Structures are given as C-alpha cells and as structure tokens.
Amino acid sequence: MVGNYVGYVGNAAIGVSWQIFLVVIVFISSLFTGMGVLVARFAGANDPDKVNRTVYQAFLTCVIIVLCIMAPIGYLASPTLLTLVNTTPEVQGEALPYLRTMFVFSFGMLMFFMLGGALRSAGDARTPLRLGIALTILNITLSVILIRGLGPIPAFGTLGAAIGTVAAGATVSIYAFTKLLGGGWVVQFHRHMNWRPDFTIIKQLFRFGLPTGLQGVAMNLGGVFLLGFVGSLAMSAQAQAAYVVSYSQLFSFITWTSTGIMGATAAVAGQNLGAGNPDRTARAVNVAAGFGLLLAAAIGSLFLFIPSVLLRGFGINDTILLELSIELLRYLAVSGLFITVALAFTGGLQGTGDTKSPLYISIISQVIIPLGLCFSFQSLGTLDPSDIWIAIVLGHLTRAILSVVVFKREKWRNIVVDLGDSVPAPD
Image 1 (cartoon, rainbow, N blue to C red):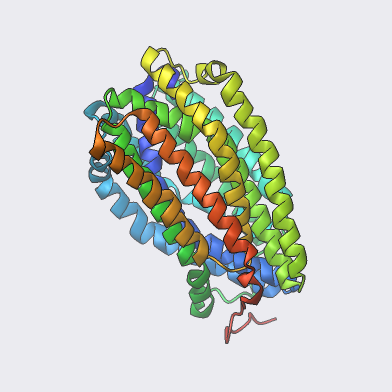
Image 2 (cartoon, one colour):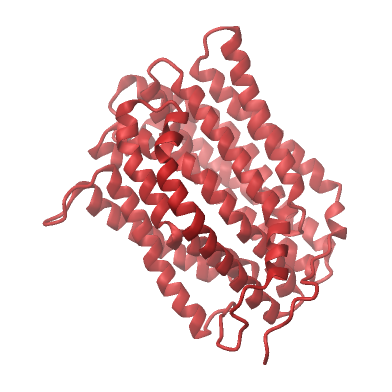
C-alpha cells in the first residue's frame, strides 16, 4: 500500500523503522516469554491461580516499562537511530514520524502480544487467532484509509501506516482487557486478586524472559547493522527497499508462520513438562518442525516461481529494485527451510525453560556469522547485494543446526519452575 502511494522510499522508511522498533519491542516482549514459561507449566499442573497471578504481574511490569522508559526515550532517540543505519535524507524524512508514533503509542499492540501468549500458553489457541484476525482486518482497513485519505480524512502517507497499526492494536486490546475483567477466558483478572506488584513473580519473569530479550536485541541489532551494510551499497535506497519488501515483508509469511509454530510448540512443551510427560515434549517439537518445513517449502516455491506476481502488489516499478528483490527472494526460498526448523526447536527450548541456549545460538548465527561475512566481503573488495543475501542464508542454516543439536541434548528435562514464597491471592 505504501509502495503504491508513496513509492519505494516509503517502503524503505517503514522497513528501516520497523527493524529499529523491533530491537526495543522484542526486549519488552521477553517478559511475555518468561510469562509463557510459567503459565504453561502451571496450566499443565492445573493451577489456575498461579496462571492468573503470573499474567497480571507481566501486564503490570509491561505498563511501567512502556510508559516510563520506551515512549520517552524512543521519541527522543529516533533521529539518532535512523542515522545509525545509513538512511538517506529522503528515507529518514518518511521514517522519523513513523518510528516516533510506534514508540509512543504501541502499548495496545504489546498488550495484544501479551494476551495472545498468555492464552496460548494456558491452552486456548482459538481466542488469540480470532483477535489476530480482527487486528489484521482493522490494521488493513485503517491503513488504507489513512495512507491514501478518504473524504474529509487527509492522506498521511507513511505516517498513516503507523497510525493505523497503533489504532488497531489499541482497539483490540481494549476489548481484550474487558474480557479479562469479565472472567470469560481461561486467563482472568478478578477483584479478589492481589493488585500490588509481586516481586517474586516479577523476578521469575525476568529470570526466564531476560535471556530471550537479550536474544531479540542481539538478533535485531544484527538486523540493524545488516541494514547498514545494505545502505552502503550502490543504489542504497533501492537495495534497502528490496531488503524491506522481500525480507521484511514477503519473507514474513514464513517467519511469522514459523513464529506461530514456535509459540504453539513452547506452550505444548511447557504444558507436557509441567504434567510430567517429557517424552511427549520431545515428540511434539519434532512434529512441529515437520509442519514448519511443509509450510516453508510451499511458500518458498512461490518465491521461486512467481516472484514478479508477489512483488507487483508493492508498487515496484524501478528496474533495479525489481531485480534485487527477485534475487533476494531466491535466496530466501532456501533460507525459509532453515529458519522454520530453528524456530520450532527454539520454541521447544524456551517452553521448557531453557531460554539461555537460544540467546547464545542467536548471537553466533544472527550476529557473528552474517555481520562477520559482510565485513570480510567488504574488506576484501566491493560488497555486492548477493554477498549480503548469502550471509543471511548461512546465518539461518547455522541457527537451525545449533538449535536441533542443543535440544537433542535434553538438558531441559531438569529445569525447575517455581514461584517460591510468593503469596497467593485470598479466596
């Protein structure tokens, strides 16, 4: 949509901004990983009181972090962050209002992520699906109106995409919060709860979640620096737009599908371990990886056989941009097979409470290897787009191999999850 009404500069602006935003959002979302570990274990052990207390403390902690840290610092630091990734002045002009809007008004979207993770970990996968569909429809509808304008509503261009995203997230989250208070879901907040911060639970959230947050920061910082390498290429605006369209947008059909599989795998793995069935945990992860491979192969075949059809929807008319986008999609068709296996086994590790191993794996595979290769290529001669695409594929391959090897060692069988001396809510 942005590509059709603003051009490839708008696509590049959204991609660069989103990559920066992910560094922060993934760190905050790490609390939800810690929450998911606890909720899955307690749901498997049939302890709904601990499930509800854990989710509420995750919500409370998220509110404080977003309002007191992310929004003010993100707003002030946005220009510096955009300069860091070598954005051209025209791209930065489109990206700055988008990025600031996302930093300041994204709490609704974070609330959606938190509730989705809590409900899935507690065994309800249908409600997050419905909420996700509603969020997607709202996001598309509002973005179409706000990007191009309609009647008295002016055309906001790239900024309209940000406004549509945060408005959709806020709407869905307000509805979801009323359902939590109404008591109609498997997770609920009730008036007899202890509404004060429970630092024992919060400590456990950070214990299991912080490694995942550091993992997300490392991966997305790697992505930011990779964008810096893309920005150093000849025709940098076209190269960044190709990266955004092919990698950030089209490849997300594989990564987000695989992320969904990862979340489901984490929930099943944690619940089975909480119920005392570790062997079923191992089988579930293998099955999830198989489903992921089938989906990645199907989507990857579209990248190989009809790339022009897929790219046409982004309003790509520039010849160089089209060639770069098609070239990258060919590499990503292969890379998708590796990333889906990696994420399935990452879900198995995180769901059982081993959140440190994925951190180390990500640093090696998503930071050291791709950035090291790009730096080497650049030092030895001219850095070409294909060099960066190869670095991406090799990073994903490494991540898949290491994730499988670490999970098969089965050290996760001995991880203990407990709230210690945390006082339960009164009856």
